[in-house]
Every structure is written in C-alpha cells, then in structure tokens.
Picture 1: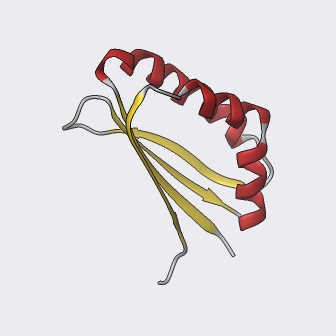
Picture 2: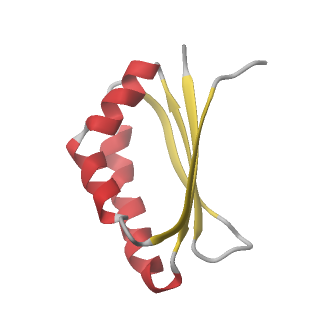
Length: 95
C-alpha cells in the first residue's frame, strides 16, 4: 500500500537559514531511494520559516527504510533544537 507523508516544519527565526539548507540537502538523496515515488519541499507563502514536505512512498517498508538511511539520520540530527514545530502526518489515499 502506498504511503503519503505530509510534514510541516517551522524553523526558529534564528535558525531559518540553517534549516532551509538542511531541508534542501536531504531532497536529492531521498529521491534516489528505492520506493520513493515523490519527495517535494514547499515553502509557506504566508509564514516565514514554515515548510511542508509532501512525500509518496511505495510502501510502509520503503518509508521505514528511508527513516533509517544515513542521509535522513544526519538530516534529523541537524534539525535538533532548531525547530518551533514539527508535525508529521502519515496518510493513505481513500479516493
């Protein structure tokens, strides 16, 4: 079953540049992973420092493998202490 992820990331004001850099750096290696169908980063037009990832994964296993990769682990660690908010929603399509 295909899994979709919507992750909302709100950077602390003083870390916006570093968070933006980390977000951009994780995109290409994630897109190269087996099972990655879509991996897009969006920036909120109305709220500075707010970003949304939209991801599609071929399966739960593919998403779990992504979360274990070296580049994702490095990414997650690089965000520690730099965020106001992180909300991750795992979704399945109903219609």
